[in-house]
Length: 522
Image 1 (cartoon, one colour):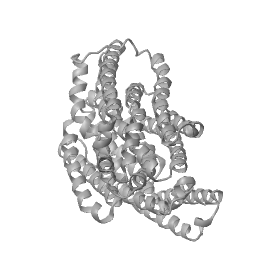
Image 2: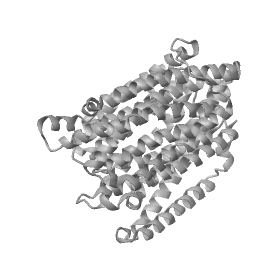
Image 3: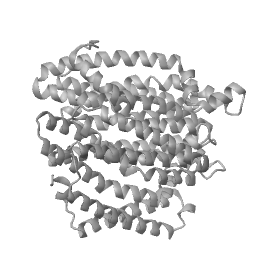
Image 4: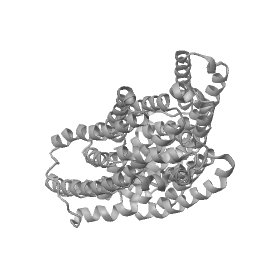
């Protein structure tokens, strides 16, 4: 079981790495085109709203409720019932999404006022940020329809994952990045504000991603004519599981959105600094955390359906061990060399033309988010321990607690350290979320971290700290800030190779072997 999960996880991680690399290229293009000023703040705001709703409706809630039910139908009733269920799910979700999308496009000024409160107040009073509100309302009309397409992409991706076609769904986001990059390059002269070209790229990307996945679904033979079936038994089951999951699994996204609201009240650049910081954190999170979460949910769902409780616990323990193995070096490594990474990726064009030191500002944000990186990853592994058992209520209760904690941390920290307080509050609340999820799994007798994994965690942390100190020290020996881009890239590549040699070398000295990661252990 674990070897199959490991192989599938590596496939997803490989495809996700391509997507994340293209995402960083996209962000470099955005940084070069818009910098970190007014236009960048507004585009990133307009792009974040539909992405938040996507994770809330589709990846965040629907998929977590849909996958266990689909796995159960597939295991117990066969492909005919799967086709019926998929048709009902597509028809029902698609109808709801269409209504929400129309309301979002028509009501874009209301959405801009709700989530960009500071900009709306300035527009109302004729303040200096009035232009941001007007631009945000216009851009949302282009970016909001992305919700419709990408939610259906998430649904089709969930179906493909249940049938172990992990690579297709993991590769699909690459097409969004290609669309945004292409529109940025070829359409930026077509608009008076470059942000419109990027917004068009978001819309096109949604269409292209859905079109890419449809042939693979047809090949599986699971598609039939969609039907609206709100009261169908299996759809009702998904709906009941989905409603609490909409909140529970999207806590981190809600936190980020609340950060955006508060950041709109801070100095210009705050939203951009948080965005670019979050993007660097999303790279290892997507590469490892989401990659493992993608394959572990269907596996846990099948184990629960088959009443294999011992294998269920061992699989969760394996997932935790995998996260520790890759999460700790990513966490400490980003803290050590994020300024160089940010300089290589973003410090060009409009990003570096302003008087503000954006590299330093973003690097501080990366450090604040890095504090919670392992916790972000842990949530991706621990939460499926509830969803696979079709328990969506417990994560909601925990999510409410952590959401309140996040706001308390925001109120305490933001007045003193601005946007850094928002990033640090998100990290602290994520850590609380992970701890509470584990505490509940433990008290329910579902999962307890094994003694072997505790010892493994200590080894990972020690190796990661030594690696980060070594790489950070070597980086300080070179005046790379004044170097040419290719010289900076060469140094970054050397440091990354050094980091891998030091970390994996120490892990080998500590007795960790490949089988430690691949196999289930007590």
